[in-house]
Length: 250
Image (cartoon, rainbow, N blue to C red; front, side):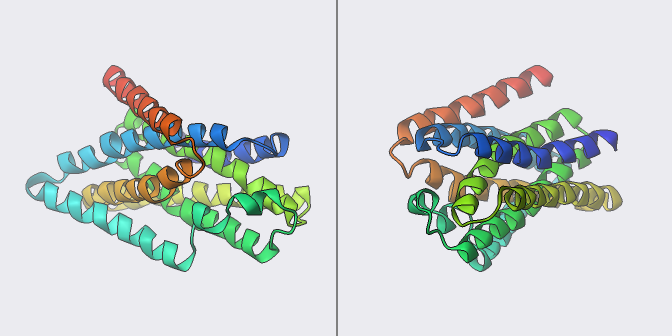
């Protein structure tokens, strides 16, 4: 339980770390942001496949493949429905919104709310990973999500400051988005602990949410500013590092 709590705080704290970096590097280049986010996407991709989808197959028994496929699509559809209600990062805040001082406050607050809402299933994915009993795999999943949260936390800052929100309130908003992820991690862990029979579906559901985030949000965002080649290689590097780590830890 201590490991789960520390991981929850680490995953949520990554958003806060990103926010603090956002105050320091207000004019972070798109190229740098794209490379970092792509690396995180590669890490998350490996974590989703190795830490969630494959264990789901292993724990699913005779109907493992059916449960796993159903869970993947259920997770993706769930986030798709959330996107229809509250669009996420690349759909809410564009380049111009970050650079001009006339950013619309309501749009910026919607952007922050979207990050908070999307952080809940990501946190659940981190918590569900511990349900398999494989702490190393669970930490790999949480590490991938945390890496993604750092650049996400960074991009919260500039549009809020540009919209006239005070630095103190901006930081509080970033903190809230991180706390949502802490809550999600604990929810995911306790859900599979109380009802272990849902573990195969829960693992693949969490994997589906992560695959959706990577394909629908992270990759389009990192390929939108002319750095797609570097972003592609950064994704491969992130994926391979996690693959090597999995083999060494296994």
